[in-house]
Structure formats: structure tokens, C-alpha cells
Length: 392
Image 1 (cartoon, rainbow, N blue to C red):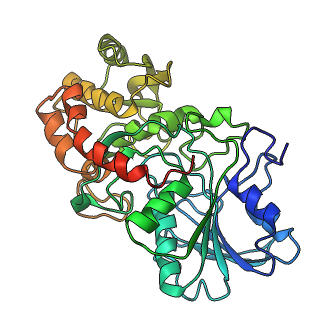
Image 2 (image 1 turned 30 degrees about the horizontal axis):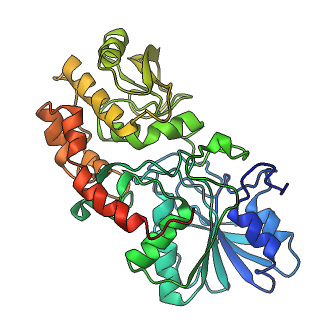
């Protein structure tokens, strides 16, 4: 058994064991979830390898230590006092490594835990690293990690490129069913970034696996995805960020809890359970967010309990939720106004959904199955492209 202590051996373990980095000055794009099965962090594992120089650390959104909340445009460039190397923020005044940041780097290593959803900035930080690498001639190695919600299911709307942003740079679906190394191949080859790229596959991972079947420890990839349950709900529930409804930020169960101060949670849960959405049960709750939307106010709402992972359709579920909230109190339901992330003009819901269609669908009370039917032509095209980059 490897240091991963489970059926899955991570790409970073295979790379370090290979000795291929000896003699190299390595820059690492990582955060607290960049650990192996024994909780050894990638920067410490690299620093312990004879002949390898840890040259720089690059942090994605939330920072290298993941101590910063979402949508904070931060610039905490710093120096790591323990390892005595610079820490560069790639969610700051720059989102792409500069020539100066790469000056002492022979190879850029990406070891980030993606969560299988288009609107997750780590994948685009990786894409920006590929762009910088292509520009400056620095090789990139992407160490593969599991897609925690499984690599079989592909769901949701494909991004309309007119609505591209830092939470959606390429026309892919909300739930893409790819690992981070497969995304790297897609971005670099099909979308023609053209960086000098190598990927290191996992061993033992199968596409049907969820994260708790890998034998690897769950470390929060970002502050508001504390559990695998929150990650399972995230591809759909992230859409609530584009509304005035709480998506559970400021609670211990973000993306599982949702609500608003004017909502009767029992009426909401009853309506949703009566709808017969597959694989999920809605339990009425009351909660008080400690920060962000409705902070300090009692919210009525519900908690999503995924009771059948295979049947559960997170995106259709979230759309049904938004429609139920709007039906209960159409006068108080509202779409969130800009700004969102780095975007100051486009409506947040349009950025998240990937077009302005969802607003029209909800306002016209279009049935969820009819909405889902509009996705299929673009999904069929994506599935053909996706087949060319699969590693497993």
C-alpha cells in the first residue's frame, strides 16, 4: 500500500516517487487540500526530496492557507516564514503568474483539488498558469486528483461564451465529469492554450467513485465546502449565489442549507418533497447565518439530504428550489445584482448558469424537465469532445 493508504494513489505521489523532479526548481500551485493519504502536504513532501528545490508557492482563491472567504479580491503576496519561499496570490491584482514570479522556477506543479463543477475557480487558475507557461516557456505538470462527485455524470447547461468569466472560461457544462488533469488536457489541447504540459495520472481511481470511496482523507478544498455532501449539492446549489436567497454561507452546512427570512420552511419542504425530485429529501429548518446574506437574521428554509447519489440531479434540484422560493413569495424573491467575483456588469445568475436563459425560464415558470431538455444538444457536442481527454 502507498502513502495514500487507500485504493487510490494520487498523481503527486507517483510523481514524487518517480524522481523526475530531481535537479529542478519547482513552483507549486496548491492549498491545504493538497495532501496525500497520510496528510503530508505537497510542499513539505517536495521539500524533503533530495535534489529538489521548492522555489515558490502559488495560492488559488481563498489563499494558500484557505483562510480567506469567497469573493474577496485579495493580494496577500507574502513569504512563507517556515519554508522561506515566496507565496504568490493568483486571486489578486494578478490571476496569472508573471514573468517575475516564474523567474526562479524550472517547472510549475499544479496539485489542486477540484470539485467537478464549472463554476469553481481553481480550474481557471490552472488555465491561467498554462497560459503563463506557454508565454514564458515554463513546463507545467498537473498531478491528478479524484473528481469527488464522480467522473461519469455530465449535467447542466454548457456555458455560452458570451457569458465567460473567471468562474467559467470555457464552454463546458455545470457538472463536467472530469478530473483536474483531464480538464488541463481539455483546456490545453482542445481550447488551444498550447503550454508545455505533462499530467500524472492516479492509480486505482474509477470514474464511478465518489471521494469517500477512494480511501483518501477529505480536506476542505475551500472554506465553504466542508463535507462531501456539500460538494455533491454544489453543482446546483451554487446557482443560489445569483439570488437574494441564502445558500447557507455563514452556517456549518453551506450549499446543503438554504433559506430566507421571509420563508416558511415547512411549506417550502412540503412543496419540494411533493414534487418527487429524485434522490433527495428536503427537511424544514431554521438557521441564522453568521455572515454574508441575511447575517444575524433567522431564516426559514430547508436542508437537502441526498439519499440516492446515483439518482440525485443537483442542477435540476436547485432550479426547482429557486422556483419554489419564488412561488412562495414572488414579491420578495430577487436576482442578485452585480458585482460578482471580478465581474461588474453581468448579472451573477447569468455568469453562474452560463447564459441569461435561466432568468427567463424561472420568470416564465417553465417546468424543470423542459429546462433540462434545452441542455441536451450542447451536452451531446461536449461529450464527444470530452471523450478525447479522458484518462480513466
